[in-house]
Image (cartoon, rainbow, N blue to C red; front, top):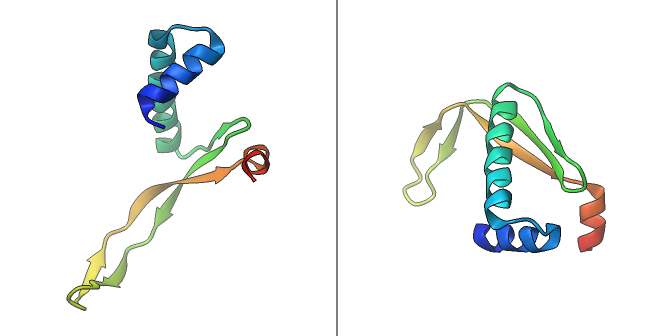
Length: 90
């Protein structure tokens, strides 16, 4: 499902305009970004939980050349699916 298809489906289900739904999704992305950047978790009821985690710097092997490369430390986003959603899909 694309973003436009998601917006259309939510707009139809909630009987709201596509512009309103698009604004809410943009706001959600903005709030999620700020929340995760601050080091906090974001729980989306019935969907799942977004959290940030730090990955340490490490060495890895380039599969095509076999050469060792340095992978820098970085912060990544993790997502854990809510039990309700996992049960609904299964």
